[in-house]
Amino acid sequence: DAGVIQSPRHEVTEMGQEVTLRCKPISGHNSLFWYRQTMMRGLELLIYFNNNVPIDDSGMPEDRFSAKMPNASFSTLKIQPSEPRDSAVYFCASTKRGGMNTEAFFGQGTRLTVV
Amino acid sequence: QKEVEQDPGPLSVPEGAIVSLNCTYSNSAFQYFMWYRQYSRKGPELLMYTYSSGNKEDGRFTAQVDKSSKYISLFIRDSQPSDSATYLCAMKLGGGTSYGKLTFGQGTILTVHP
Image (cartoon, rainbow over all chains, first blue to last red):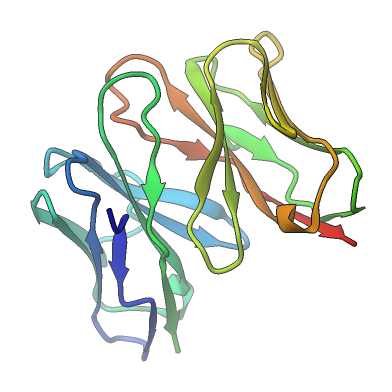
């Protein structure tokens, strides 16, 4: 299995532009998580889906952020309009719900820079 | 106050040293405890997983959980330069409602120098 695949790996954009981050979870996994990592705040959960349904989006910082999961193999995180303070590494993770030992597998992340 | 507190370090030790990494938490509903390792410019990877108080050993790594004190530790024996990474503690609620949601500590940056 190729693991969790995120694209792009790096994104540099100007303030005010729309940014779309993409994630393909591991096949067979039914929970998907979007995290944001910064030096100041560490790894923060933004939103998570179970069986393509958003369960908890309380970590989404503002209405400028939105996430979708149209099917079991694809999710997007959109920022519109982007701001310099959105600069961070965004990780997608997936897990197979069920049992106690449900390891979350992370993608390589998308490093976003908003100038 | 954050639910999970972890000293961000950085921590620098010589090769062969014993490393101790620690986290405290405030939510007594956390039932599952994990340590993730994150190399530079990579995603976190699961290192150890435990759900009961006490010690769990895996090679040079020992995870310790004290639920009564809400305190977890990771010990690395005979540390190697390849152990240089950021170590993140993570916790999960019990039951089936959390859907695998993890709450992470800040992460501790560890450097093991030859």
